[in-house]
Structures are given as C-alpha cells and as structure tokens.
Length: 105
Length: 105
DNA sequence: AGGTTATATAACGATTTTGTTATACAGATA
DNA sequence: TATCTGTATAACAAAATCGTTATATAACCT
Image (cartoon, rainbow over all chains, first blue to last red):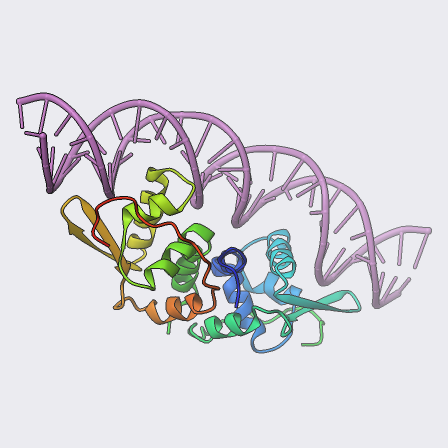
C-alpha cells in the first residue's frame, strides 16, 4: 500500500516510452547500459539520465563488471510488484538491437 | 496488451498526485467536479484541466446534470483494469472534503 | 604513460507541464 | 432580463522534462 504522492512519483518515472521500454527489456534479465545506447535513437548521455532517474526512484540496481555497468530491476523495491504488473501489459516488440560491444551479454 | 508508447502516455497522466487522488475518489463512484474544487488546494481552472487531461486519455466519462458535471471512471477504457489495479495500491486517506454545493451527491 | 571504450555529469535550449488570473459559456432562478 | 453558480477556455509565467554537445571519470589495453 502506498500514498498517492509516492505512487504518482513512480508512475511519472514509468510515464515515458523510452524508460518503459528499457524496463521491459530488463524484465528479460540484466542489461548492459551499452545495449540501451545501441537500442534507442537518442544520445548516450540521454540514456544515462534515464537510467539515473529510474535508479533514484529505487527501481533499478546496478552491477559493475570491468568497464561495463549492468542494470537490473530491483526486486526489493516496494513498487516492484506494480512495475512487473505493468510491464506484463506491454507487447513484446521485436527489437533486435543487440549490443555491439564485448560486454559479455 | 498495449504498446509501450500507449501505456506510457496513460502512465504519464497517472503520474501526478492530484490526478491520481481524483481517480481514487472516483473509484468510490461518480464525483461532481465541484467536489474536486473543494477538495484540492488549487484553482478551479487547474482542476478543470486535470479532468480534461484524463478525459482525453479516455479514462473518464462525464454526465451533465443541470449545471453540474459528474465524472466517473470509464470502465470501457482498455486501460481500465490497469487503472483499477493501480488505484487498489493507494492508501485510502481520510480526506473529508465534501462538496459544499447542491450538486446532489 | 598514452590511447581507447564505457559511462556520468555539466551546461544549455526547446518543449511540456502546471499553476495562475481573467474571461466566456451554460444552466438555474429571482 | 439580470444575476448567480458551476465549468471551460485563453493567455501567461515558472518550473520541470528531455534532448543535445562538450567534458570528466573509470577501467581496460597496448
């Protein structure tokens, strides 16, 4: 159970097609930041800021491996069940935008 | 099932504490626009625009009765189940902000 | 050390959001 | 008709959002 105030803040983060799609991709498992840069038609700094926004909302966790940073859904977030529920309502698009680097996934 | 694009637009509408609270109140049934004006600490035109935004997103239906306009959740919206699911995660606040008019509810 | 790759931050501009006040419109009623 | 109440729209300002380019930082690799 959440306050309207708290939930609205999370929904504001989810209320963006780029971020929502990033989250959907992370539902399949950890994603390297570089794969988002490859996948979306916006600059690397823009991707970085979207990730920061979701991290600050507590929705993401990160893991550094060498020079790569892998992001995943934060299953311990109090909003995790809601996020999953919403993501399950999104069509899986055929977005073959594989990471071009050696990030090992 | 929805596209990330479409769902994000709805979530953007929901990503505002005022609108989310208005929706929560409508979950209890139809609400007169005037009751929102009484309930929230923003101007009547601001309330009117929040309502318009939700109407345009297809989330609300309106019914005119004399000079009053009553709003309710649009149960036929493809996003209705999602909206309900989200509203069910919101604490019921004790918001005794009854409508001061004769809007007959 | 010096260069390359991956990511983050800073600074800026265009656009959107969200509020305000002023005004218009709709319906009820004296 | 004139006026009151309820609601919507217009015009505007402040703040937030989201993109860009330039630059900084971190880690790897000669």
